[in-house]
Image 1 (cartoon, rainbow, N blue to C red):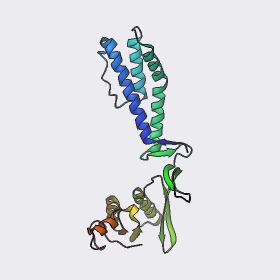
Image 2: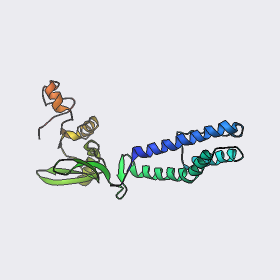
Image 3: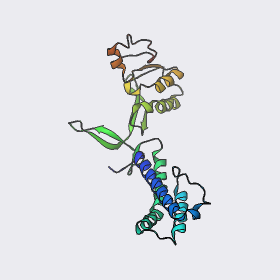
Amino acid sequence: YTFVWGRAIKKHKERIADQLEALWNYAEGIAKNDLQNTENIDFKEIDSEKVTQTIEKINEVLKDKKVSSKVRQKLSYAKKNWACNLDKYKKQQEILEARNSYSKTDPDATFMRMKEDHMRNGQLKPAYNLKISTHKQFILHYSLHPNPTDTRTLGSHLQGFEESYYKVPKELVADAGYGSEENYNLLKSKKIKAYVKYNYFRKDQKSGQITTSQNNPKLGKIREK
């Protein structure tokens, strides 16, 4: 149940950048002349090296100045921790890639909402998204994905199918979880006849926006499973 969230990494980095900028502005207020020839710092784009150099510069210009103990403590903490933390966040982002989270004990697993107990209470647990292609109830291909949403798995799943069989299926039937403009364009480009609804198909059907399930420009062709 231990995990890393992408948005938490972003928040931590932004906090360090804001606090570093506040320390720099404080130093400018006390020793502006000593910082005049310093290159402008982009506090929105920081890394461990830039943080280390900036903290060293601030300590240098404030060493003979009357500074509150609170600021000294902040500078001491920043020197010991901020650069290391930024290196840690960088490694975590490399593990995350395009994901929003990963498990600390299984970095390839992403936290996904499960429905396991008899009350169907959703729980966040590290998991994989398993895709299976079948034909007449025979399993032809499977693939594992770190993406919790089905929409983003179709492309790589089809790629694996094509690499295994050196061709793509003539037709594809899938539920509305795979319905997206990107996937429809992908299937069209590969000349695969699509029987894939989109998420709001039933809603559009009830509202009268869809009068027939055949040759709809949004869908291609539709077949009820």
